[in-house]
Image (cartoon, rainbow, N blue to C red):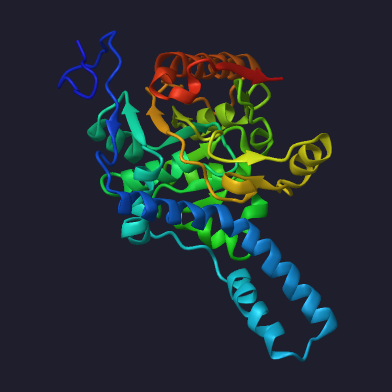
Length: 338
């Protein structure tokens, strides 16, 4: 048999009992919690700072191009726009960011051991994460925790929208976790070299926050399955309970259509006091078992549909099995957006 987190030397198998969660920061001090809150605000304010600083710079350039303050504001935008984002494992391991899991009471459950995860990363896989949320604090907490052991953002990047890769300042904030363009061709080339973290729902899922049910944009997202088959890599589902609870978002039909058409979210989001101050909600990360996706150079639609259905079923299983670990999910149901 196989017990969770233990690999048999000859073969592997599973018990029926799910593994126990591991708390990233047990018994944190008040100072650690405050430090974690400050680190979380770094990510929630970054896109707004990028937008307002860029807007201010453009307005000043049009009205007062000779003012020194105009170029002081434009300088970091220009430098950021001309330089590629850089990942930093060392930065994620600094004190404030190590404390971020403490702020969210982050716990993690893995159905595979660290050794198996390292083997999968070397063999190349797609870590398929959901839900997206305004910002994936689950992914950020996991990244901080993983960076202390098996994960190097420079080796295993996170796929992001092309618009993020082109946004000055914000691309460098996201780039701390390592990033690559989420376009199919770029991902295929990346998967020939390394594993990738991919948020399946993307920007479209950002607007599905709902206090009564967790809604995932997944039914029409089948390209990642085809990509995995063609690249000869497996799929590992990852679920972050709490990603959609940390920040609320302004939502209407126009904003949703704009986001899907441009790959950019132009909206206001908030936590405490109507500001981008993340709420202290519990976040739980769950790493599932690899699906066992076959390598097929030219998969048929029937083969894609079959393994996509297996992925959806596995996401449902993870949700039903582990939602009790997060009190905010006690009465929540999982729904798949058509």
